[in-house]
Length: 71
Length: 197
Image 1 (cartoon, chains in turn cyan, purple):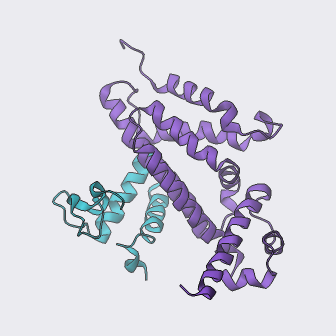
Image 2 (cartoon, each protein chain N blue to C red):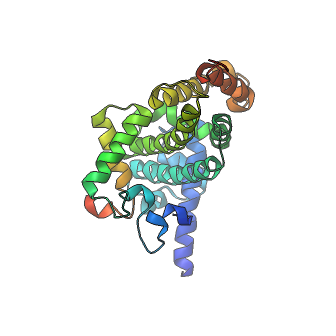
């Protein structure tokens, strides 16, 4: 996160970004994030849902907020 | 950081940078001994840093993904029109053109995780593309079509020229430098609404 607008709700004390936040600023659950990322990949790249899920999981695996779910 | 740690990091960096150049020129199926020779290190030293060649490819692609992702973020943030975005997207690809071309040519030969790193690079581009194109659709300047088809049409056009560089640029000059403007203009003509329609 490089800019204040990248932090959830503009709150720099949070360790997750706007893309991992619900509308109320709370962090999404792991399953919510995985589902929303998969849907975003389908919407923007048209991948098959199963393939999109694998891409989403591999992206989340490298993000500090989510890596613990893959250990 | 101790001198030893610093040397270790420098050697790792040198191996990655050399592999990046060698893969760009010769493809991913290059023996690790070639990379060691080009980097001026012993063959065994490569495996002291990367347990397998697949691991070297994966680490290299991780670094590449971070660099290209960072460039895409920086350049796309100030792109307010689709024309600006496409131009900046090409600026980023042009910076890494030989390696990027090798990546799209040999993607299916890459080890499992590396393949997904390529997908993450595309996802970063698709994210910035979608932000700009959705605004244009709302403004009525771009035809209403599914975002993924708009993105894939752009990526398909660009990748076609890159993977056929031997036909489009037989003297090995950069493809984007020569055809970038034509690609953007053609794509815009396909997706833009005619004024008054």
